[in-house]
Image (cartoon, rainbow, N blue to C red; front, side):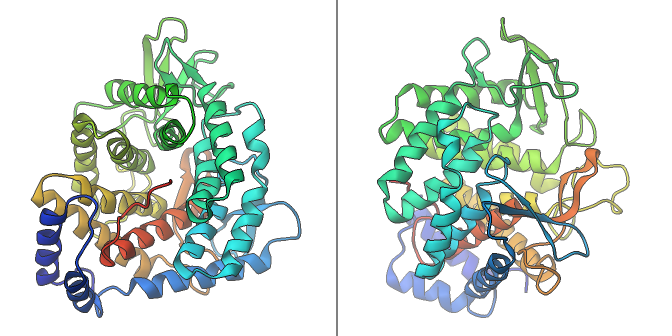
Length: 419
């Protein structure tokens, strides 16, 4: 069953109209929702499945300071990476979500262990923009759930480190401070993925960090909005700026099919990123923009709502899918459904997010094929890297989306505050 009953959808959005973005539902409203969804999509079962898969993975990790990153098609073997890898925060972040779900001490212990591996990132020079992915997903989630002051200290230090990549002449954070093909190094490059790392700066600015971190995050979001989108609100993966003048040199792709194509995960980062920026700033222009960048993604999805790795790839339908993009967007849409002021969009965003989660759960779970949560993600198709793989960030955003969905049905805030 892919869609909730019409009666549930109607009740859900009537509730949102009267409760607003915090979504604090009354007991009778929660009971009604739970009754209507009991035989539709059992989110508790999907989270239990994710916990079981993660438990299998724990048994496969060698007794070294490494973290699981990906599994190749038709394999059960994880590729392991160290704390410097850009994906290092997704595994401990997933464990923190599983602790949040189960309240079981064993998940807290494991989350703490793998989070601690990443501590050097807070005291090392910034290697690239991915510090938000690495540290906020791990230490940030850990601080939210435990209040451990050491975690807060790491997050604040890392925010300061990320801020060293900000170029005030350009108005954005430098994504890759090194030579990358077609990036005109040593000019200033900014990639769409960088939008996600702004959450680290927003949080730090409100929790003991310098107020300039907020200004940096807003500037980055504004400059990206002005320079990194086409008239139809599809995103370029990378924009190159003159580092001295701030002038835009060119807009290109790195992981998409072509410079003018819509790379699926890039658009997903944009949807998630601007939704988060609106939550943090409450500036209506960011909500409007989040809605605008969501439109082409939803309008161009295939029937099963799981995108091909690039919406303009030449051999669709014989192109690899990207479950990671779907998981990211499902998570973002659940939040965006609570923020938009338009009833028709509230309904659409929630319905599409739910359908995506159902499709991922029914047809993209790894189950007995390997110990990841999901199959069929695509990392870097042009480089032939991680094509049709299980990848840790797909699993992270899938679990996050399931947790957000569960909170919504329980009448809680879709996004728990990091306080």
